[in-house]
Length: 264
Image 1 (cartoon, rainbow, N blue to C red):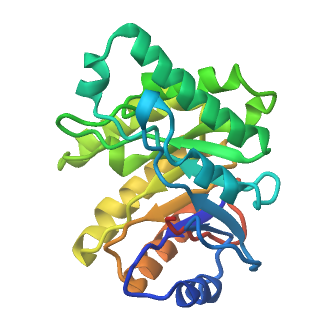
Image 2: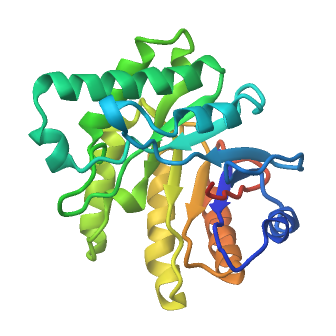
């Protein structure tokens, strides 16, 4: 089990962030789409969200595919479902919904055909939230994509824990919702995003409790766990990374190092 952190601060230069990742000894870094390079850790890329254009085509498809053609085989990429509100998707007729799903899954299948490891990331659960925030929708997407590619094992779900528990404050509620998502999507999850905490007072209890719960739930899955929080300073990110690393040392499939991630 590899451990990672997501860093997407505008105030830091990308080279400085990469040097920071090397300095704390990570296994995997999630980068922006514009960046390529060779480092002592694995690279993962958070691709831009697909945008639906005229005739329900993916407007930024060519830009994303062009970048991905330069990636090595079996590079991990994370990508959201297209940017459409659930209420707008529901308001469309059945044929239009089918067209969106068809164009969407055609696009994801092209990424799979490049032999990339793809994680479809769940959108945040909010009022008037976006399509692709529920386990059922993500599983449906993955199955539809698998029908269109021979690289079926490369398609899965990037489970963003904070997106699933958005708006919840009680730790028991958070753990209940986490368990619900994790249980339903367990066989599909190929990466986990978890938010590190800024407030030091919360770290020992809440952060460690969530990290431990994730480790116990996914003890038998060799997948990356990436800390992703744009608000964290580098020192706070380092603290959360070390906390997660210490927690995961008790897990039987934990690797020797951790990981780092950066959004595209």
